[in-house]
Image (cartoon, rainbow, N blue to C red; front, side, top):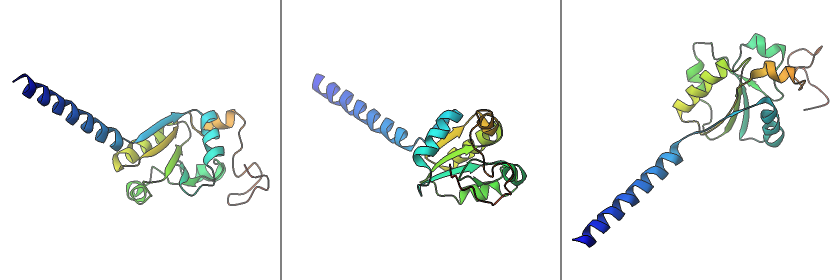
Length: 151
């Protein structure tokens, strides 16, 4: 009888451990990062095909200045969810906006859609500018122009 209880307890613990591992494996990795940390992530990951810098501001805001290498997906357009759903969930995304509010909503939507590797630049591009980090296009360069100095 004691052996039967011991085996039952062991089986219950094993089931609990396996269940916890499945839950942890399925949980998306979302990390809020400062602009300093975001810059380090960009320097380490920038240019890799599985890394995307996603700006969720309006196209007008994007044209005035963006993070180097960023792509624009305006969270305020009606088709945002469908465009977001079309993105590769296997890639790593650094998501930002002006102050962190819209990007927080985008991160929540991405989490619901099953994106697994997300960085949220919670302080937004305003803090990036305040720190003196580069924006593209730099002052005096039209949107779509190039910057010879790179990042």
